[in-house]
Amino acid sequence: MENWITVAIDSLRGDLDPYLVCTYYMAWIFMGNFILLNLFLAILLDSFLEEDDDENLDMEELNRRK
Image (cartoon, rainbow, N blue to C red; front, side, top):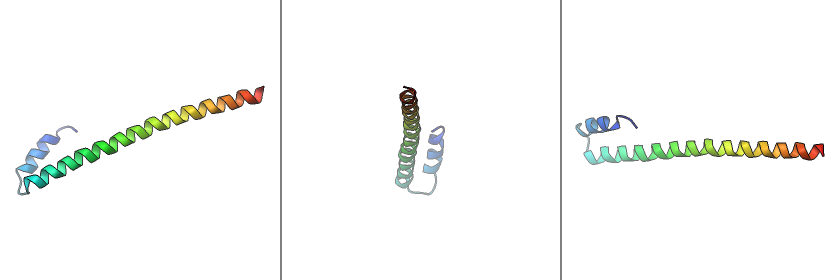
């Protein structure tokens, strides 16, 4: 997300339709942020599930020892 404004301005100065360029960059930013957000949430949820699994294994070991 750094220096995308410079690239967008250069693209707007080109021969393409400015509305097409703006639509492309808006879609790129929204989809890119959506994918990165989902990736972050997947990693976060995976760490919570691993922690929960570890607690379940610890409880099973305690029950076996009794």
